Image (cartoon, rainbow, N blue to C red; front, top):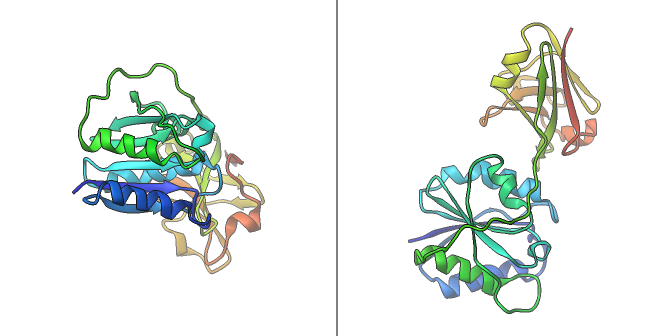
Length: 249
């Protein structure tokens, strides 16, 4: 039974989400359709890419991951990519390169099917059929849209990073890994991000009293800034791509 995961910005958008899901299940009754998240912010490519990048490996190999974010931006052109024996269906709007970053991934073109509107249901079904039936994907395409995230910069005693993602709890996840932190920070330090200033990294999220800011390395090994039982991003003005500065004192 093929597993198809669905990540989109379509929650709360009327019939759109139901139309795509219903069409998939009608065409492929044997498919197990699993939502990753349909609450991605409108047109938020980075959030969609980060979500599926961190989630896909928890699914069995052979799973197909459909990411539906603003297909019109890629003029409905859909691409297929494969990594770790997982398949990804993305529109040609830069989402793919955000998911895989600098990994050497090849993209194969689904092409567009004649249809009106911006859901591109027939194109999606064609892409799913190509993967489910293990059709020949042809030659890898050479031209596709590329979007990139910011990378952290480190020097002795200093790290300049940025916020990758803000989850629905208001916690800010940065692009600073624990390994990167340990490489450049060896003594007492201050973490500054928006209006938040912290002088230590805790072992876990709820180490502080409710309402107190906390920094910790999450399950993905990324530095996260949160506020126990509150929305830290709102209180401290944290935003995606906002700067994070760590300096030794």
